[in-house]
Length: 121
Image 1 (cartoon, rainbow, N blue to C red):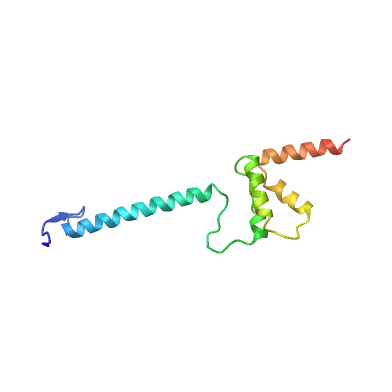
Image 2 (cartoon, rainbow, N blue to C red):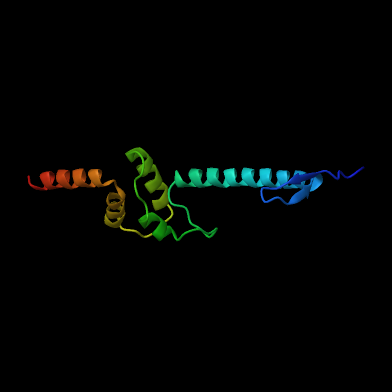
């Protein structure tokens, strides 16, 4: 197997042998692929709620308290049920408070308005 002695010139004028340039091309391609994979994972993770920056699972109580509605009410309700199933000994009024607090602002306002009109009768 003969090693090529031809060279490529870099942007700064340095000469790189073809076999090294080929290896650099493979490394660059792999790096670009990994970068794309990382970005896809970030996008996927971001669409499924807040993700812990470490591999350690977040505290279930803190995880429940951090819930925020970003999609539909049904998606939020599903996520709330999932998170609340991981906690124990929470009174219903506290669970309700966390649920209401995580709603989008316009829904919070609607709930407040509706609850005031029901209490006035």
